[in-house]
Amino acid sequence: MMARSHVVVGIAAWIVTAPLLHLSPTAPAYLVLAVAGSLLPDIDHPASWVGRRTRPLSTGIAAMLGHRGITHSAVAVVGLVMVLIQLGYRHGTVAALAIGYLSHLAADMLTPRGLRLAWPLKMTWAFPLCRTGSPMEPVIVAMLVAGIAWQVLRHG
Image 1 (tube, rainbow, N blue to C red):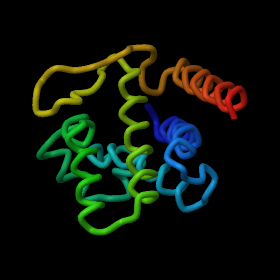
Image 2: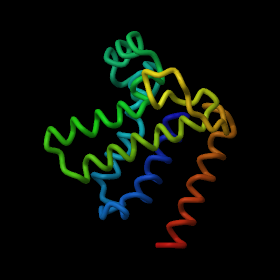
Image 3: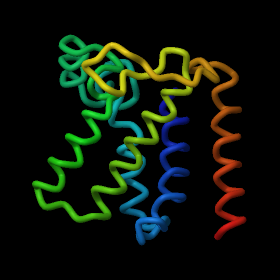
């Protein structure tokens, strides 16, 4: 998916999960971290929104590991969480970044290419509903957000 879609899905995922973690879904710092997490996996793609802003790091990662490799896996999520906890970051900070990151992975699984969640294993997981950048992408994102909004309003 495109950066804009990842941001929308990341915010929606945070708004739904924050209350379950006893955290504020509207705290600006947490929202910013959820958005950052929703964009971070694409650091392995120099042409992505985050990749363009982190060159030459993104170019090096892409050359060594390729796109949708380790940064798009459960290994990356677990590693990120472990490092942040070791560094002493608070629960809310770690949770917001991790939820955003996980939202990115979930959104990319909606494309035909899917993800290698168990990287370095070659097996991919996908629920191919739309191609990245296709006219169907914003429709899928809008449906996801509408479903989440309905759930929040129904149970909120």
